[in-house]
Image 1 (cartoon, one colour):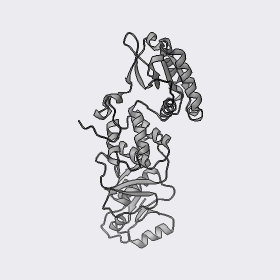
Image 2 (cartoon, helix red, strand yellow; image 1 turned 90 degrees about the vertical axis):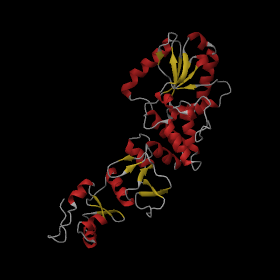
Image 3 (cartoon, helix red, strand yellow; image 1 turned 45 degrees about the vertical axis):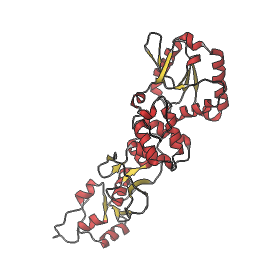
Image 4 (cartoon, one colour; image 1 turned 180 degrees about the vertical axis):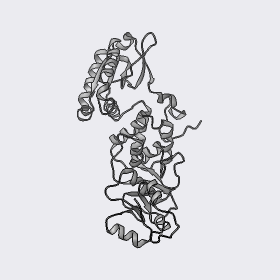
Length: 349
């Protein structure tokens, strides 16, 4: 695209190369610096050749803008000090369960004089994210900060669980970084994220697992359940890790969900894992997420009946259980010691 300037003898830089670098998104200040006056901008937008995306921010193309163009426009509007956070940041990182919203939330220094407009939600803060990533033309808050910022605006515990679990399960961030962000956020709208964080600390690695844990926690019969445990056979060799395990009865609990755990191509590998556990005498109980949500009483009854019929069998089968099997357990700091403090509180040692 070539944009003629008012004067052919003007030596000011052409807007072409700048527009190409910025995916055809430019500001009024940039256009003025290239010798394009306000009347020309008005005519181009009036004729439908350009579009005004945000105040003093233009797209030199027509049609629907891409997510990347909208991110660039948002950054140009708020300035380079702004940092993308919330659901838009999670989408940028590739989170599968990020809430879909047309708004893009950006945090800016507290003294910044810029109001929310269009698809941009401006949030002032006293502390920018010092671990923000460079997106080229904009900055993106770290995954931990984006997870907590997103969760603070949500009211559905299941969605918060999915985001927090995915952040750890797919190694976007670790528990230490999440704990720091929960501490930074304080008690302001963080009840759900603190609860989801506590579940992940205890070994839960997905939203359906958290729902199963909540379902079984109401039982007066069942003993403690270890989530995502490290299982060993009598000879010390490793065994596949189920979602939950009742050691006293050698019962493995599995949430059968393609959405949260495996693609259809992984089905045979999952069956091999289950067969290996069965070979060592472990009873595997399977529950789909829908059943956990709709019939929690039935799920609890099935597990309790199985436990009563196999109580004491764990000592005979010889399967040993330990800490959560994921590598995340090795990253835990003092706040994840056996004493297990509440998230959002520092150790006083």
